[in-house]
Image (cartoon, rainbow, N blue to C red; front, side, top):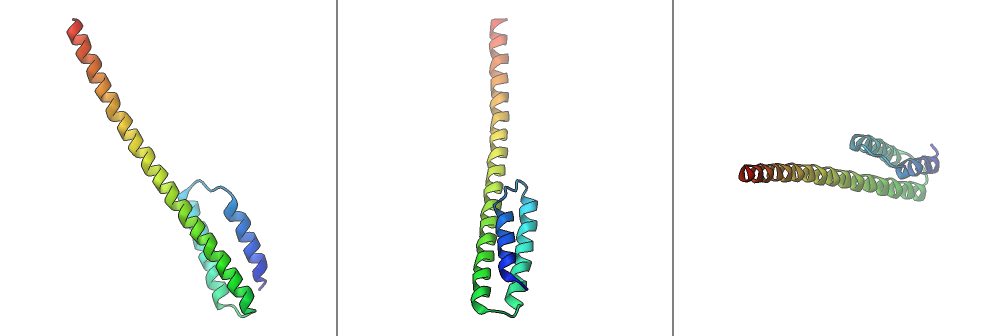
Length: 102
């Protein structure tokens, strides 16, 4: 098993922008499988440790991206709810003004 080639391939795909959290979860699961393979593989201990460190860093990066996307999604939905209630207040104010004019 060529561990160094696994690392370079994984690094390239993590740097691409992934917009969907389910895709991020899938990528994370694949990296964890690679991590398990490296942990159980026989080979140079230095190379294994370097690969493990790299994979763990990539997993952490994906975790951070997932958290960021969830926070953005939450903020967006809260903003939409706020806009909706602001619109209904404006509509009521407009109706009140019309009633006063009539």
